[in-house]
Image (tube, rainbow, N blue to C red; front, side, top):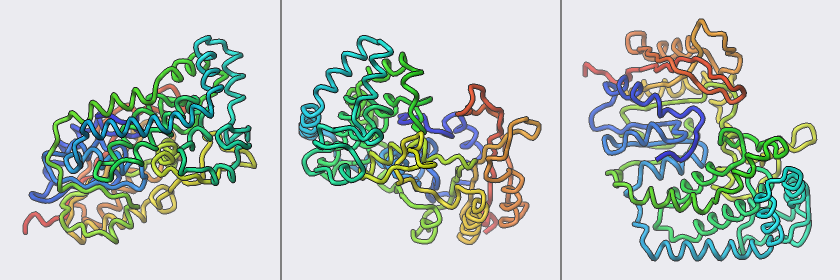
Length: 424
């Protein structure tokens, strides 16, 4: 089940990781994917091993929780689906009645496919970013009026903020209404699964480069693309993913656990005595992953934060000031943070596998944005575990570059660290 076009996902490298990592799996022990991201690695292990996952990003936590713990929630029966659709419809009708003139105009302009009309229309849609008059709030949109909006009546956050940039008016209304229906669900149902279906539908419709959400595309320069994207229904994509997922065979996963913590806090606060192997796929560069998925965290937590400003102007990505950053995401603290993980694994006799993509030595690709070099990372691992307990493996592949059309040749390295005493 693929939910996102996740940057740095390991789907293509799973055979390489699994083949080299299988001898590091301790019998009867759990495997912890400590930076689970899009969930590719942890989900590939379910049904074979006890699997734990962790990620600081809320959306990543929910994706992993939906993938590795599927059998732990109730069946989505007909009664659930009836109520869910009713809740969705209730919120959508409230918003649609308020925004009817904009919905009608959007359908008309998208169908006509006339550049000037489309651009003019979206410039007139009221959002936080232009401070226009909102029929929903019955006043001009601002941070204060959004913060004081009547959430107890209906959900409207995405309609007020992103209905003329990342999404269209109808799409934003559907996102808000699905989020309302999810919130109204009985707590016995797995909220993570429903949120993951919402992430999938947003990913299918978002108006941004390559499906990532770092910043919206220019409508003026991408008229044909905006017409194509705005024609996709959020609710249709959601229901399609829902039907696909709920019919999957359920793995034996009742013992699996998903965490949502900074990994340093996880090591300090959780009892990980069941873990025999930690797989760590940390960030490689200082280009923050959180900006690619900030919309998913916003829909996840569904609370308003002040908009980010750069030099007195709104950021190009239309970010809110609610993005997280771990110490492992900066050059200054990357190696010292990983050294904590090395020491933890060594002290607790846990095996460790580090994934790290880095350009080939003869490559012309720049490395100034990388958080460290593969040589420094390998040296630190050997200093902790000892030379004989650390093995380096590598596999070449082409990595897509978000800023350029070409792909860069890199090596996916695995630093395999033996923390257990195999002679014991």
